[in-house]
Length: 375
Image (cartoon, rainbow, N blue to C red; front, side, top):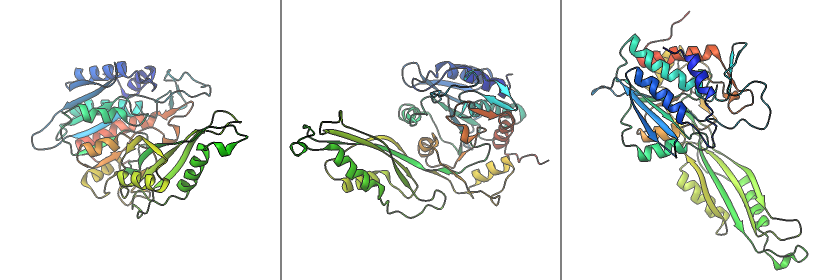
C-alpha cells in the first residue's frame, strides 16, 4: 500500500497546471488506487479528456456519509525561476516541495489514504464519499459543471474541504462575485476630443463610485463585512485618439448577508445604463455554526475545543465548498488540509511533511468518530 508522502509525490509529478488542466492521469491513478481498495469509482467527464473522480464505500441506509473533497489542478508556475524542480517532489529540511504540494495535492493524497485506512481500522458509520474535481483554480468551474451534469452525488452529513489550512479547521469563507464592466464611446482625434465620447472617462467615474460603494448589509458574525476591489483596468489604443472602449474588473468578497442577485442589481443601478456587466465568477459564502455536531466532531479529531483561541475561523480564499455546500442542501462544511495557506500559488511552493502525515490521522479520526490522541 502506497503511503501518503509517496502518493503526494506522484501527484506532484503529474503536471496538472490549469490552464489547460491535464487532470486526466492524476484522476485515473487515484481512481485506480481507490478501486483496488474496494471503493466504487466513477470517472466523470468535464472538458475534453479532463475528468473528476467520484468514489464511495460503506454507505448505509440509516446514516449519511461524509464527503471529502479536493481538486487535482494547480495554478501555473509563474514567471520567477524555481530553485527546485516544480514537479520533482523534493524533500528538504522537513518540507516537501513542488507545485501543488500545499494547494492541494497533499490534501487529496491524505483524503485518499485516510479513506482507505479507515476501513482497515474500523467501520466508518455511514461510509465516505470522495468528490475529487478537475477545474477548480479558475473559479470552481469543474464543481459547477459536476453538480449540473452528475445526478448521483447523493446526500451527506458533512463536508471536509482539504484546501490548505495548516491542519487548523475553518468553518467558513467569503463568497466571490467577479465582474467585468465595459463602457463604449465614440473615437475621435485627440486634438478634437469634443467630437468623440471618451469611454475611459465613463469607466473612471464608475470606478470612483465603486470605491465608495456601500453594500448596505450588517456585519456577519463569522465573515465580517463584504469588500470590493477594482483589480484590472483597460482602455484606449493610442495616445492621440479618444478611446471608444474601456473596461475594468470588480472582485467583490461577500458574506451570508449578501444576496448576489441583489448586489448585481444594485451595482447596475448605481453605475447607470451605459455599463455592460459580465459575470466571471459567482460563488456564495461558506458558513457553518461552530456548535454544529459535525464541527465538534472535526474539532475532537483535531484535538481542539470551541473555546480554543482563534475559533470560529474563516478563510480569505474561495473553495469548491461554495458549490458543494449548496448542492448538498447547506450541510455543515469545514475547510481542513495540511497545506500552508501562505504557500499557495507561490514560487518554491512547499508543505511540511509532518503536517501531511498528521492530517491522515485527523481525517481517519473524523471518519471513525475518534478524538485526537493527546500526548
